[in-house]
Length: 436
Image (cartoon, rainbow, N blue to C red; front, top):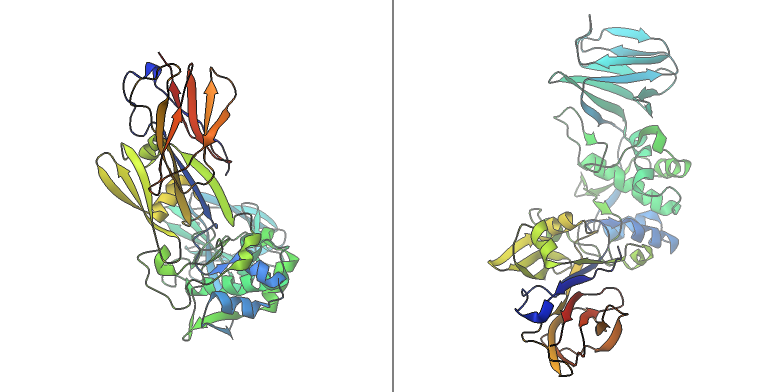
């Protein structure tokens, strides 16, 4: 996200000092996209292009795990819940089997199933395909559909073999045209993650969205990913004999993160540690920003009036752990994940930089030198610019900061003049001086 934002703080005649935050602008930029735990998908793509095969890629991201073959099994994927009715059909004959084993055949076509009790049938109902896949609300799925009646509404679950499920997952989690070895790595990771997160004592094992993995049924399938799944059939990553929970994400920003530093309530996991990820730089999300915010916007977003500064506390992996919001009434600590979510940031590997130009504390006199003071943190090549009577912005001087980030610049306004701090990417708040 790249946009320039000019914040105007007009001090007409400068009869009274402006608020302390009048000339402040927060500039946020960062690295990576996603939580940063486990395999970076762009990193895997880069390693594959560099000649690594998928077992080596997996061993790099999940240290100490073993690649092993497990027998196939079925999984249950939640497709719909809370529906009054659903449309189910097939281009070939299909049938339903109720909870007592009673069967009913249907001719090709579409049938509407409702949550009301069907005469002679008892929920849950298994809808089984014949020679052609079933369609649910127009979308085709492999395997069977199980209709549960919950609270007077329908919950629909897709039951199918694990690797058939993966056919609808892998191309929606990683672009199908990527390197075959990257697709194979994604297939093993998706298979392992599914098995490690099953919910055996509930109506379903997996969600069809980002709460588990994005699943699109037959519409998602591609030849390249089907081949990758077949080439790795049954292969998973194990840690001490158990299937590893193989978290993955889009872009690490150059280094992955240990799980306990991303989710503070999660215990350390030996195979989910921080590892270098140099090939991740091929991602357009390797670096992102800047996003610019006024203190007033931060105050509104986080319901903290009088915001004066944002200080980032970091983990040893470089990502933000906590953001200290310094405000009029004290300091409020916000978890980096919550800060990211509220502002829509791509990751928690971010930096908050500051441009601050203080309003003058006294009146300006025509043709007399006055001093402008301010503060800069984390930004280079900052310049002070001026605009006279609404004309073009011109550079006054490069800003040279003291070790504490503060600076002082002498100016001599001859007429109404606006001043601002600027970098190559952003322009800060405007202070307008009207000499007597």
